Amino acid sequence: MTFQIQISAFENNATIPERFAFGKPGEDSPFAISNNISPAISWSGAPSAAKSFAICLVDPDVPSVGDDVNQADRSVSKDLPRVEFFHWVLADIPASVTALPEGAGSSSVVPRGKPLGQTKWGITGRNSYTDWFAGDADMEGVYAGYDGPCPPWNDELVHRYHFEIFALDVESLGLSGDFDALAMRAAMEGHVLAKATHTGTYTMNKNLR
Image 1 (cartoon, rainbow, N blue to C red):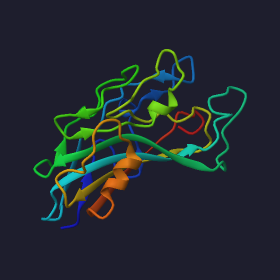
Image 2 (cartoon, rainbow, N blue to C red):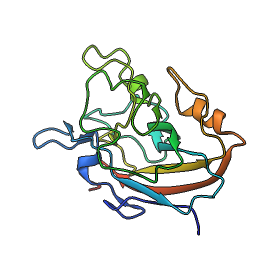
Image 3 (cartoon, rainbow, N blue to C red):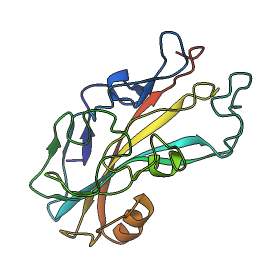
């Protein structure tokens, strides 16, 4: 059987429902806080040699330059080079686990971030909201666990969100403390038996919805 990931709340390459997003368009403004709930995820067909799993949620479509981001008199060109933004980093998921329930990674927006470290489902790392909110007096902090989509509301590009799961040949990647997705990728090098991806899309640009 092929290694597969399932997210029943939205089909592969379909729009992510707002309840799984960090931000959504407001009634009288371009931005409002959304529910920020992590979707239920399950997987099947893992190699028999798998000893653990890891999850990474990455948006590869984030503007490489932020000068025009969320500026009312401008738009972020769809032709602007893009970089990665990581929304969820979860390592050392036991081999006996084949599903995460809705809300396992987050049930709301938590100003200043959710804590790093061991959870019921594995060990969670730092996501990219840590860098995004640096210097913000109300939101600055270390963001761990799941924090969902919140692309610029003036972006001409609909963003893609890749939910990636990795079947690994080790029980633990040896990660602890303040690690991020790049550290997890480095630790997984040479240990990935299989990978599966489920992609969703999301935009806060009212002209693209």
